[in-house]
Length: 263
Image (cartoon, rainbow, N blue to C red; front, side, top):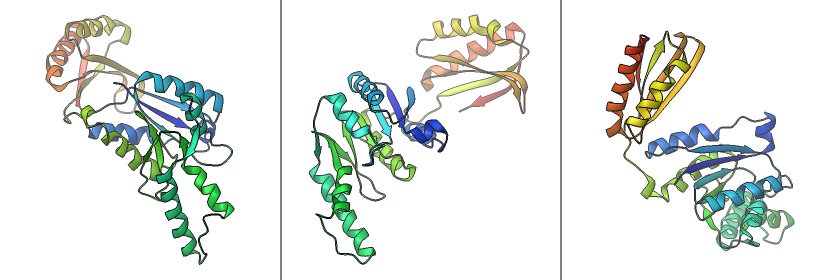
């Protein structure tokens, strides 16, 4: 099963706000021995969201979607999810109760009498309108829940809410958790061009199934100048032989290995 991330919002694409979700999601995955396979940024465009979510629901991937689940006119994620699934939208009873608890809390803080029929309260209940049959994702920050359908989880765009909700979503799938172990070995190569090392990289991958060889060239690294970070990643019990083969191949090529890295 692949793991994906959607970050939704015009404010991300315009640069008004910086994405804080992908880096944290990668950390949460790593804490559970998991890794991110793909990520995508999308604007608040309902047709685009419907098309993407239809693809996501059909994929079988475990996906977290951040943003666009509010009740203002520029939020389209809930409606797009329902359309992608071919389902009606409905007020989730448990979500309504959680939102009502929050409304009462806020009104009492302001010295007001909570009213479930007040127009502001009814608008807040809209945040609990999800595709029929959805489950809820608990929000420890203010109790306004997100929702999920299958293995696709929808959380708010606010990092303080989204990040613990992401963690909750991942913990619903303990079968995907793996022991946290060394998963990447690399070294810094100087005196070689990436194209010249490509045949070696391909040979190492072919000889060591399940291992990925990666290359990250730099032209102006602050420490090593023009260089290539060359390495392998994969299951810990398969890393060492592949790493040794890659290192030996670079030495035989005649390039200089200046620094070795372990992550």
